[in-house]
Amino acid sequence: MTNTQIRAVAAVIGDGQGRYLMGRRKTDRIAGGKWEFPGGKVEAGESLREALKREIWEELGNQVEIGNLVCSTINHDYPWGQVTISFFAASLSSHHLKQVAASEFIWDTPEKLLQLDVLPASRSVLEELNGG
Image (cartoon, rainbow, N blue to C red; front, top):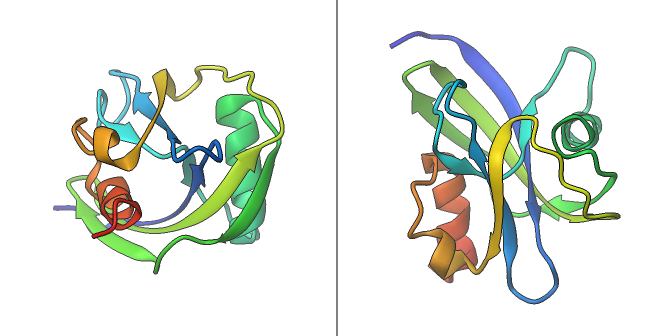
């Protein structure tokens, strides 16, 4: 286990109908093939919200409206480092999803999304959204 510390943010993007957007990581990336909420690393000097806006633009090609934190910040140890990640409620201003970090996208309910191979930090948020 490496002791690399990673500060990250993710957008819990809902469609207003109980469905949420998740992306499947490209297979050539760390944790390739796993599903997650879109987001990424916070760069030096960025606020969490600034980082999330930049990441959604870079990864999805969309502007995003960021709401409140969805849950407490999550710390999770992965084989590549310890990730501290904040999940924010969000909505897209357009739906022109480009595939930069993700090989595919899905909109579905937390219950259905929990059936996918989801990264543990995102899984914790899905479980909370699913009522438990």
